[in-house]
Structures are given as C-alpha cells and as structure tokens.
Image (cartoon, rainbow, N blue to C red):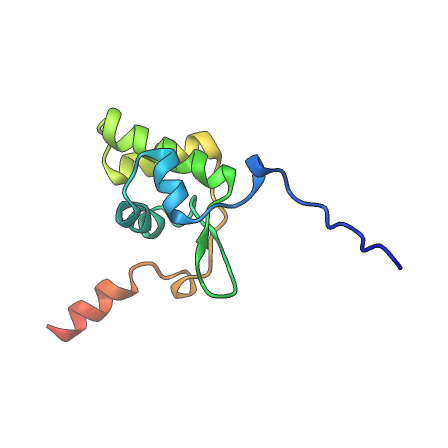
Length: 113
C-alpha cells in the first residue's frame, strides 16, 4: 500500500488567523479592526478565504498593533497615523480603487446638492 505524502504545513506562528484571533492578539475589538481595514487599506490587507473570511498574517498583526499604538497611546489622528505608517512601512502600493480617483464620492455628493 502506498503512503500518502505529507503536506508541508506553515508553522503556527506564520499561519493567517481569523479576525477573532487577531482581535485577541492585539486587544482591539473586531468591529474596530474592520473599520481600520477600510481606513488603512494601503497598509492593512488581510487575505480572504474562498468564502470571503478575513485571515490576518503576522505582518497584518504587526500593522494592527502599530495602528493601535499610534491612535490610542500616541493620540494621533487617522491622517497622522497614516503618515507615520508610511514612514515606518514605506510608501504603500496603491490599489486600484475608484480608478485612482479617491475623491469620487465627494464629487457625487456635491452633484446631488
């Protein structure tokens, strides 16, 4: 009988974790993590499962801890925290949201008035 080959597993410390574990590791509520994911989308991009669930990698956990430190301990604004994250983690790669026009919603609101 042939033996099955074992799949090589990623070490536990490097495996992506669900948002509940990320919340526990960082001490930040899950709803706050989801909000930060939108606000800091340049720096915080967890992988998604086929079912759409978020999975946070060790580097995402590091970013969450840094965001928490900047906002809660250092009392930075969100804009200030973004500048500090750029200094620490470098200029983020731009994602193609709104085709590069980040002010599109403002224009749409202004047009409705």
